[in-house]
Image 1 (cartoon, rainbow, N blue to C red):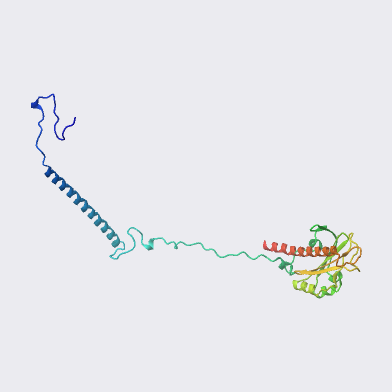
Image 2 (cartoon, one colour):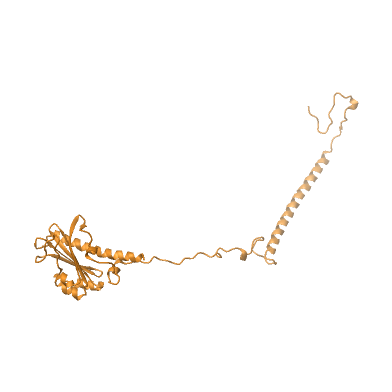
Length: 288
């Protein structure tokens, strides 16, 4: 059971004279409505006025900040509370590491070390230039025979070659012989003071300029009177010659491929050995 708002409750156990008295008068609804509307108007005015005051306060704070940032009446783009431009560390103020441009030195040319007696100072002998007891080129194995070395260059040459060697200042001739399957070849390496001298010796040599064959150590005399095949070339201060032929004294013809192969193998090996000599000296100089 519910009762009207504001009315005192009825107690059934009390006599009528002791019961609370109810006010049966009707409230003034118009007056109440007008009072409520008046309160609402005052609340709206207070809210609007507070917002306006807050806006004015913010504007004033910004204005003060702008005006006071430079310490005078002029406007500045620096916000208040931040350091001036001079106080802000610049990205370029710190020293940046600098490196000197460097480049690796060009590699030493091995040919330079075998082109002049002044640089080509490593030990030299037939056994150093042609080491071991045999030589393998591809599938072909050549047995090494006798070796010889002389400073009397003309004595190690035949026909027109002695004059060529003498004319161009030859200082030494080293010889070595290899043999395989009835074919023998003698390689003669003539040493000069400069590359220019060796080059002139190669140019001056003709088809009759041959190295003297070197038999011995199981290799019979060859290319004494028979026709043999010869080659001439140079590298650095070295001119080198080959003379290949049959150990039975038979003449060599253009069809004897085995003789040509033997001569070419030994000429190629001689070139490689002279170049290796330059590479070894260049490497040693680079590591000093």
